[in-house]
Image (cartoon, rainbow, N blue to C red):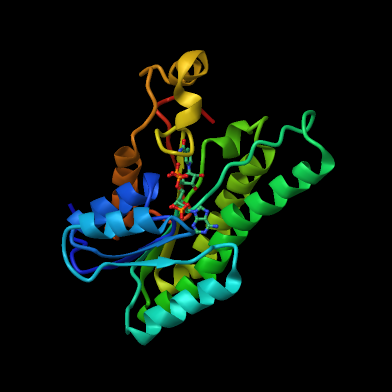
Length: 251
Ligand code: NAP
């Protein structure tokens, strides 16, 4: 396996769920981790304590606040920290089915979800690309979703945000290639985390598990393994969206 020891990795929402599994695995492989979160400082402290190795950091940074993103990168530059791997993982889901919600909830859903799942990553990419351009190397990995392809009837803004994230991935892959910056996306199906756990019980949970012929959902560590592979610079990956969904959906 390609050696990523000593590389620096920034993971948004890197303190819980899939993000925490990514932080953990990259730290085990010798990366220096900066994990960000929105408000759950307890989970952030726990994560920091659990990471193997030295020099890791956690910061609160709301990806919907462009100023906080700019401050985060200023801090990193002051500390003379380069950036080899950015993982845009922070994301939210929001139930707002068109035939069931009032106009205000409909709008809130679109605004909050696009701000978090699309515009946040776009702003993170802007600052990361500036740093990586100086180094003439880096990889940006966007955590997308199967919902980008099959739609999300109950969470239409979520599906649309991930489809747009995939498109952004391809645009940036092309534009940043001359600087040796690779950009890719990973599109998981259901993963057992706080975001999905309440839907994984009872009959609905059974239905979700049987979407895969393996009759289960993914664990966060399985998504982290895909991120690790994509982060390695010895593979011909840029502009790709990898389906990691246990054959629960073919496109
Ligand atoms: P999760 O368990 O709900 O964790 C979300 C993480 O994102 C938390 O660390 C949270 O911070 C952070 N976050 C949320 N909004 C933020 C904001 N505005 N600014 C900064 N950080 C923010 O979610 P997950 O299930 O691990 O999902 C991670 C990614 O995988 C998301 O992009 C999601 O769309 C994608 N995904 C998940 C599934 C699934 O079934 N779980 C499937 C496909 C794709 P706090 O801890 O402070 O709240």
